[in-house]
Length: 162
Image (cartoon, rainbow, N blue to C red):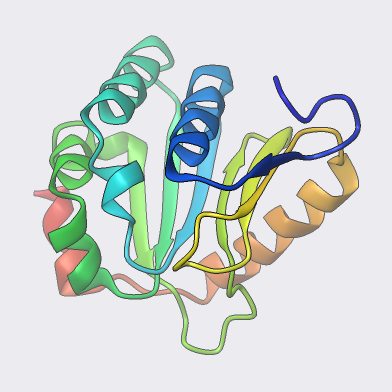
């Protein structure tokens, strides 16, 4: 996986972000933890990525996808394929509205405890695919867990469990 040399792989374009997300999906064994402003449709409504995620969940029945979303209403509009998958495979998905006071302001996708995509801004593609920084990834995952514990379900996200 790129980024395993010790240096993060740079993400500058939509195509690179899509490829990095697909790599994380394919390599995942237990969990994907996601922080997003409103689930960018280029990632979360892409049919290839949604199919890769579906296949991974079917292969790994205990796979858990936890998603913290800052703007749940907009996320539902942006990513109908992602939410349709969450409805079909509901026991593998948990979604919550990010707490307003969270320190998590970046866009993150953390695979297990081994690698992650970090984009400092929700509105831009530039970021990094990080694979060789277990301490840094652990710190981000701890921040995610803290925000998760203080997050809440909203009506928009509750509907995905129907």
